Image (cartoon, rainbow, N blue to C red):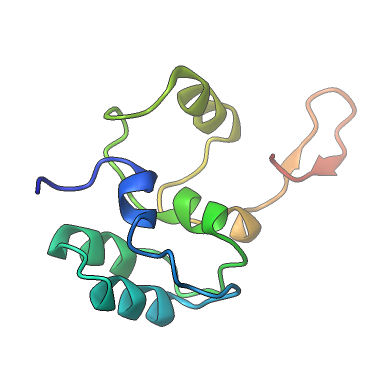
Length: 106
């Protein structure tokens, strides 16, 4: 198998995880599920926080920024300016461009 390029390829090996789950739990679950080394490496690269859902994991894993990404996903990432490897709940609030009040991306 080639290196994973989409969150779906990584999440395929996390089907039996109960959330919230920490980074170590996710890595161990992927290894038990027989994930290729590239998937395990991607999970080891995520921040060491508790993930509340598969969606948070998907947003945090480092992936090839161009491969397998839909136009809507590319636009979402551009809008939120999500830094690679940072879970959504760990990001700094952004300021509203109209009235200057802080708000969360998403």
